[in-house]
Image (cartoon, rainbow, N blue to C red):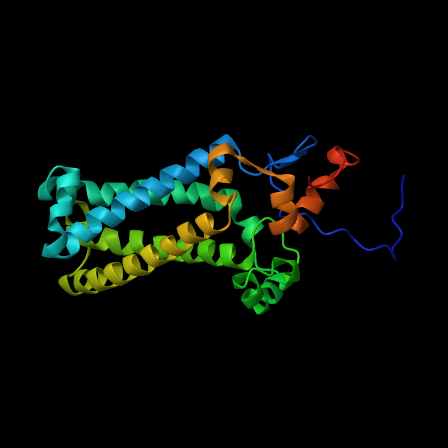
Length: 242
């Protein structure tokens, strides 16, 4: 039996490394970032969110009512909107279960935020090393987690077809205000998410192909790459970046 030295530090779990993450030597080095299941899960969530935004805006103001044409008219939009919300909630729940651990706040996130001006100025070499997700990505993840929970809860209160007997008129009025305000915040967070994905070259393609280059991982998520390279199954596989 092996006895551990009580003075030796206990290794912390590599929360940033998830099932399916792997480094493949070559020219260039490639790094698996998202599995097929994760990518399908993500795109179902993304499409559901877009459809909800369009149908919700169509019902929000008469000036955008023309958007109901995308869903087969006003009545069909009213029928489909809450069901798309259910799809969004179920799909995002899958994403949450997949990624919550890698998005837990860490001390390095505060340092990353302190250097955010360097990031905006393009001086990424001054940014601290981060894991699979940086503080900005974690903000989007936890914001959407909270917002979608509020949206589904307030949406159920408003869903008279099935839940009318269980809520009062006053509760429905409050739910409408909360639902509308939350939806606006969710759309804003979604816009930030999409803008960041386009701004950081290689991010968008990671969610379509599932992998990134070693150079991309080294530049943007160096701590995550280090953890991958030093996994027992991958030790000695070669240079971390090309």
